[in-house]
Image (tube, rainbow over all chains, first blue to last red; front, side):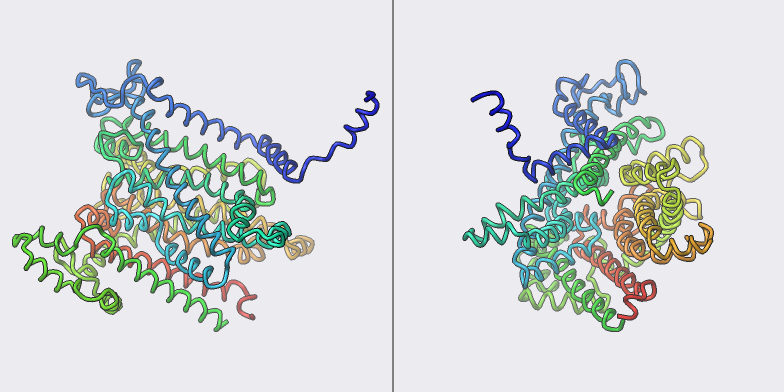
Length: 297
Length: 309
């Protein structure tokens, strides 16, 4: 084939699909949003630091030095030490290994059940929709943290139960978003086409409806992770989550509260870790929302 | 309008019935036998006879639907049982603590709404300017700074370092400043964002352009034409915020060692005082649902489209 003929074939190459164009537009919009990119970079750094904690942390989170208790930030202990002479920096770094997964797993629980209930309500409608959504209204009638407290009353305190409690109390928000998204998607032509070629209802929901309802849930899950980290830390702070000596940002603040007058660094730095992480996740979430639906920005 | 109110009222009653089912279920979802747990706490010990007597006293030997009906009937009459721990009536214990929580959440709501309205309107008027950006940073801070940390930091600054305000709760107006500010800032972050978005949307409407064409100044346009339509979504948010504030009170009351329903709830969970937990959760949900009902009904005043439907 001559070079001329090859060029002719290239000219006739198919245009990128609608999906590919949408993905490209999303990346372009997201990359243009400086605060969102900054948020994403910080989140990635925080995750990296917590994953590499044993290599990065200057001390073990439980290493005690009774000659160095309640010492202010110094060269040996950059963020100071606590009441048992443990290095605050190391505990903050290790603390992320619990605080981040608690938030992420809580959101994962809420997302999975939100998808399930939202898909059922939105796709099947009728009495299924009525039952699911009225039950979600009931769950929404409880302030989030009080619903979480009610769940902890049933399950008992502890890290895993805090994840479950925060996850359960967030389910209604995800269900609502998935339902409204499914309601829009289920009337699309490709869903009608899938039904026309004989796809089962389960296949239509799993293969066509849910993947196309994913974008708003992704935005909610991102900002929801920030909220879940705060709620979980709040529950640890009031003594219902992680228990000492396990380092977790909320429980570290709870311990530091008793030493606020003489060792404010015990509360300052775990709190700052929460703030930096949550601000970064919120910036990332805002950026995702703006890129996925520019009308909302 | 009457059918709109009736519809909302019916919806609220259904939700409250669902709430009562959930709260009733708490006692039955707890692993183990509540009667045995109570018997174990008493001096009489866990004899089968004594456990059976407690089970009978609490009505736990009745069919589930009878227990639920009994729970609902008593709750409607204000009888939420007796505290496992203190043996005081649950309703009495809650209402002793309720004024302190109401004072805190009321003050926080006033700060949150006042500050949020001011900043939201101001940033919308100065859209895409430094003022707008600063207001958004303020709002992002409120969404991202945990109230238990900002509370501790304010205590350190204003009570420990500057010695301007008391460290923990006591009597007098000074004791409410820090807790209400912490909780109010959290609320203000949401109100600022919502008011800004609503005002920006209304400012783009045709009637605002007409008002501007007639020569009205910006303050007059905002206060006479923009504020009322912009308040509709904001009022919804205020209804929803009460729930957040009630939840936040649990944490703020702990940080500032204040009396209140939130701290009572934590003590109840710690001592496995299940009736007290049930009572507090039920009360919070009822307040939340009723306030949102009031908000829904207030639309009839704010939004003429509903009034004339």
